[in-house]
Amino acid sequence: MPRFIGSNIYRNSSYGRMHPLRVPRVPTVMDLTRAMGWVAPGQYLSSPRARPAALHAWHDPAYVAALQQAEADGAVSDAVRARFHLGTAANPVYPEVFRRPATAAGASILAGQLLRDGGVIHSPGGGTHHGLPDRANGFCYLNDAVLAVLSLRHAGASRVAYVDIDAHHCDGVEHAFACDPDTLLVSVHEERRWPFTGALTDRGAGQVWNLPVPRGFNDTEMRAVLDRLILPRVAGFRPDAIVLQCGSDMLEEDPLSRLSLSNNAHFDVVRALRPLSARFLVLGGGGYNPWSVGRCWSGVWATLNGHEIPDRLPPDAEAVLRGLHWSGHRHGKAPPDHWFTTLRDAPREGPVRPAITDRLRSLDARAASWV
Image (cartoon, rainbow, N blue to C red; front, side):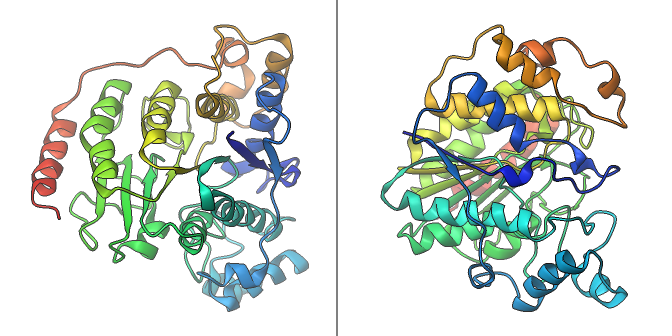
């Protein structure tokens, strides 16, 4: 039985009224999946908060201490800002600046422990893949994805496949594992978008596979990428565990990317990866439109459980979506009705453009000589 790790710390917690992460995300998934009757007794687990000693498995103790002090003081000095990148526009100091990321990290560490003997876990609060050992980076204060891999290793998973379908490249995870032949890294992300890493030519120890994709990336193209890159690389790696970072900012409605996926593409990736390992952890990630991220990650949970997604949501689920607010964005004033009444997007098919086929061909040629 799949398990869902969440926390009420995400309720009423915001990076600030002008920050992209001012929107509700994890609480929407928690409420929507419950309204659908998709959370059986025993499936939901409340995330623990990771203790500093656990975070030191990858993060610099001085940085962890600075993050704790930033929460206690509600501010940072110029020296701390410069050294640890705390208190910046991207990584502001807010009331739960340590407790919230430490909770996401605690969920990832717990997931690794719970998957010792196999299973499936969804942790939508996770996926903070930009965090670096000694500083905050790209809205990410701690890197729970790295800590998830390390926890799985500690629990007996020698070979871990990490797959990332966020619009932004997983620079923090690649920093951690690029030279580790026992961690497969596959990232599909928008080209020429921050953090401007994740080149097609990155190889690491031979197990790093990056695919930057152009604007307008559609469902048909993602299906080609799934069939020709993601599934062959993961299956050939024969992982003991799979971690999927399932950022929803690849969806067409997201304000921080220029891609055109429907959430069906995410459901297809989740469904296709599930049989390839006895241990499967699905994290959240990016996603800055509260309706699209809530609908996507709730659909991911439905996919993991084999629940049928109805054409029209029942009244209680619709009420969850109608209760969302998104200030400061044009969609917040007049969102389309299907954001309230449906979970599954209409498919967004299209041509597989030469930019995609040429890059896949280049990776195919490299794979032919990969050992």
